[in-house]
Image (cartoon, rainbow, N blue to C red; front, side, top):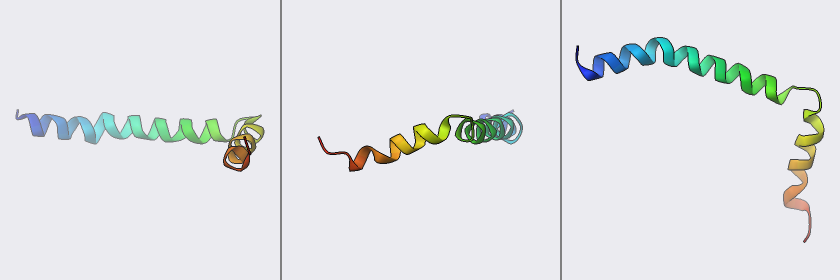
Length: 50
């Protein structure tokens, strides 16, 4: 089996699973309890004066 074909099969199967799990993890991390306060604090960083 060629290297390209092996990498293509890996990306088609496990790569898709990994990206889906990563996507769901990011969504859950963003919507977790207490996340609003952290997001608001991070959004204010450029506006704070030294």
